[in-house]
Figure 1 (cartoon, rainbow, N blue to C red):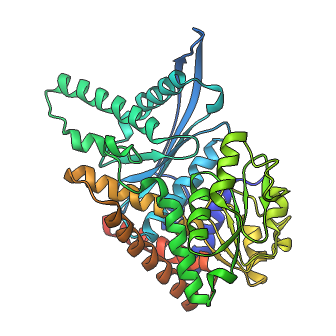
Figure 2: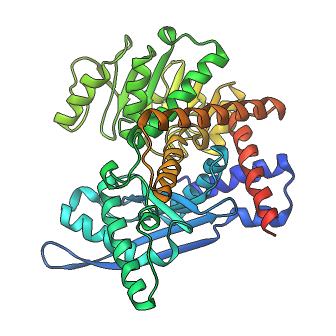
Length: 422
């Protein structure tokens, strides 16, 4: 089984060789600054009490407060959270936002929980980690199986805790600062306009820039999207609206293909009503494995990590891959894809739209401002396009692949910041 954290370290070691990093910098970047494992109890609807395990990994804050999502899933593990926090350090650096990498999670199956149980777990997790988070310390956000509503519960609990502390210590709590501790909140609760579609939209800016660089015409460019969650849906819908031929969508249970191009809205409505794409009549059913190996121009793994490995990399026929999921390609598979001449736009660049707009939300909260959606998107596009161009140029300069181009930029920024602190 692929270990996400080992994969993240391998990628770092590869960059270290190119940059000739000193051993002390490399050793520090290999491990998080702090890793917290917590166990907390929650009263369930039937009156029983269950213990849940949670994590928070704080990788590096040399460039600013830790930043990263919280996921609720039975797949959450120490390795996964550590890897994701490291990738967040690179993602923030590539996007040129003054934040560092963090990530958190709770081992829980959300579909088996009532709304009340989910709220109690969310609040209990915040109580367990509240001492290490804050608007200038660590700024969590939603991730897999967490939502803006969950962020509302979490920020509410955090404010309660801090108000209680201030009563005891006779200090003053600034509400704007406390609200800024969590991003990805509902708009009416301090969230930013455009946050919902930000990650998928950032990927679209990448797709457009890649098309410009490579001379791709949208109507003649086939795109296979794996996934149909928030990221996959917005990427597929927006790409289709721009004229790209999106021919696949998938979920954990099913995948569909229409070589003439899918009606994204129609397929999504079917899935929402039926629970999966299985049986959708305006497309053919295929497996997720088959989807990855289609002969398309652009492949977009937008679901989970480690879907392209050394076992199937030789079978990948796409000319370009845009990683909208975190860590969908293993280091071993990367080598195979590079030899095949496939250009891979790495996750730390491709899906950085979410954290970028989260940063915008943090700024708005701290200043007590509210930006219009068009303003948010314009700022986002500027960041994403600049990051793409710099990564592309680094790829050419160092005669390497685009992942290493992006990583070279990111790791150098973090190391330089670490040296300034010393």
